[in-house]
Length: 117
Image (cartoon, rainbow, N blue to C red; front, side, top):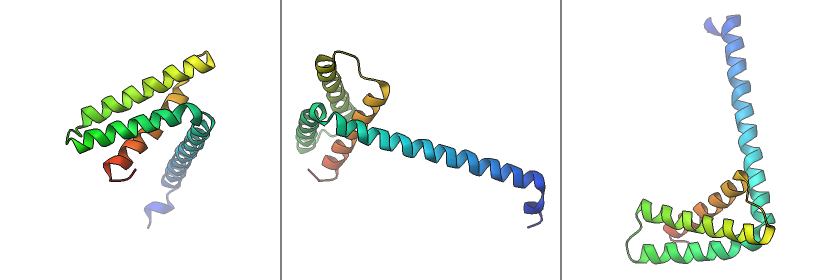
């Protein structure tokens, strides 16, 4: 208890708490941003989600659900989305948009792996 009364220890703990809260705030902002991106571009994402879901289910059905195979499905889906985005928006997707779509596709694959649809 005596160590917590030391001003230097208190300052270090406060700094650690502030850094942790800032990291948490950035993470929350990123999640909100990703959700907004997925909602905004759902018309491009939805067909890719369905294709990824079907392909992951087929791989699972054939017992080939290795990490490298699932990663290839994810990469293929992300590339398909980026191509669709470029064709319709006439610009390259941002890193944040790619991360949001990748996160959505990862969730789809995880859902399939856990027996969901």
